[in-house]
Amino acid sequence: MPSTEPSSANDLTEGELVRPMFRLAWPLVVIQLLQVAYNVGDTFWLGALSPDAVGALSLAFPLIFFLIAIGGGFTAAGAILIAQHTGAGSDEGGLIAGQTLSFITLVAITLGIVGYLVTDAMLGLLPADAETSARIIPLAADYMRIFFLGMPFLFGFFVFVSLMRGYGNTHAPMRVMIVSVVLNLALDPLLIFGVGPFPRLEIEGAAVATVLSRAVATAIGVYVLFYTDLGPEIEAGHLVPRPAYVWKITRLGVPTALEQSMSSLAMVTMTAMVATFPPAVVAAYGLGNRLISLAFLPAMGMGQATDTIVGQNLGAGKPERAERATWLASGVVAVVMGVAGLVAFLFPEPIVAVFLTADVEGRAATLAYGSTYLQFAAVMFVFMGVLQVILGAFRGAGNTKTALAFSVLALWVGRVPTTYVLVFVLAWGTTGIWLGMVTGNVVGMIAAVAWFTRGTWKGSLLEEDEADEREAEPETEIESATATLED
Image 1: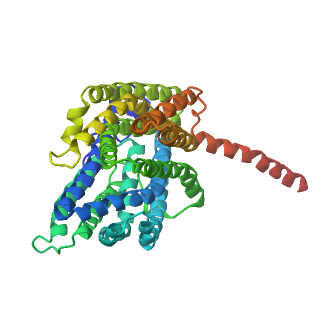
Image 2: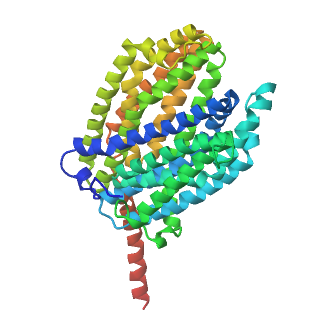
Image 3: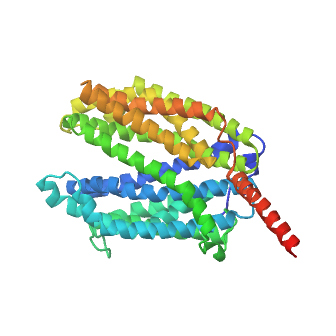
C-alpha cells in the first residue's frame, strides 16, 4: 500500500503548520464519516428486515458503546506515546506500538468475554415493557453476543488507527477503513437475508458482517505495521508485555477511558430525562443529536490532529510550536463550526425536514421541536469545536487527567445538572433541555481555554522519564561511594 505522505515527523515539527495540519486532519474526518456509513448501512438493511430489528440495534448500541469506551482510552494512550517518541526521534516507537498492540488485545479479549457473559444482565437493566422484553430484547442479545465475540478485531483496527495517527500517517488507516466499510455494506444484505449460498442470519447477520469487515481491516493493519515502513517499525519481540510500558499505557489510558465512559453515561442520563416528555420531543431530541454529531465531525478530526501535533512537538522539545499549533487549530475549527452554526441557525426547518419522512406520526410537532433545538445547538457549535481542540492538546501532552476533568465539568456540571434544574425545578419545559445542552459546551470551553493559557501542560512525557532517571542517579552514586570506602 503506497504512501502519499512522508513517514517522518519533520512536517509536523518543522516549517509551516497549516498544510500538514489539514493533511493530518481531513482523513480523520473521513474515517468518522465512514463510521457513520457503517451504522447507516446496518440500520438500513435491518430496517428492511423488520422494525423490531432496528429497535434491537437501538437498544444494543449504547451498551456496546459503553464497553468500547473503556478500551478506547488505552488506544488513545498508544497514540500519545507514539506521537511524543516520534517527535523526539526516539528508537522506542516500535516497542511502544508493540506493547500497545499486545496490551489492547488482552483488554479486548477480556471485555469480549465479560460482555458475552453479562449480555442478558445488561439488557435486563433496561426499563422495558412486556412487549419489548418479548420481541426486541432477545434480538438485541443475539446481536450483542456475536459483536462481543468479535471484540478483538474491533479493537485491533482501533489500535492501528491510533498508532498510525500518533506516527503522523492518517491516510493509510483511511484507506483501510474504506475497504472495511465497502465490505460491510456488501455483506450486510447477503448475511441478513440469506442471498445465494449465504445463510439467512437476520440480525445476527449484521453482527457477523461487522465482525468480518473489522477482521479484514485488522489483518491489513497488522500487515502495514509489521511489513511496511508506513508507520512505527514493530518486531515480534516488541509484543512481549513489559511492566514498565504497560504501566505507562495504563496511566495515560485510564483517565481517557473514564472520560469516554462518563460521556456515554451522560448521554444515557440526558435521554432518561428527555424520555419524560411526549414522543415528538423525544424524536426531535434524537434527530437533533444526529445532526449535531455530523457537525461535530470536523471538530473531532481537528482535535485528534491537535493531539498528534502537540505530542510530536513536545517530544521534539518545541512547546511554543505546540501552543501555536493549538491556537491555529482552534481558530480554524472556530471558523468552520461558526459557518456551520450560522447555516443551522438560519435554516433549521429545511435541514431537519430532510431527515423526516412525510408520513411519520407527529411530523409537524417533531419538525417544530427539532428546528428549535437545532437553533439552540447552533449557538454552541464554535464552543464545541474549540473545546475538542483544547482537549486534544491536553491529551497530546499526556495530561489525560486534565482532559478528563474538563470533560466531566462540561457534562456533569454544565450539562446534566443544568438540564435537571431547568426542566424539573424551574419547569422551563423543552427550553430547559435545549439550553442545558448548550450550557455544557460553553462552560467547558471557557474553563478549558483559561486553564490552557496557564501553560502548565507544556512538559513532555519523555522529560518526566528523564527526571525520574535523574532522581535515581544520586542514590546509585552514594551506594557506589559507600562500596568504595568499604573496600
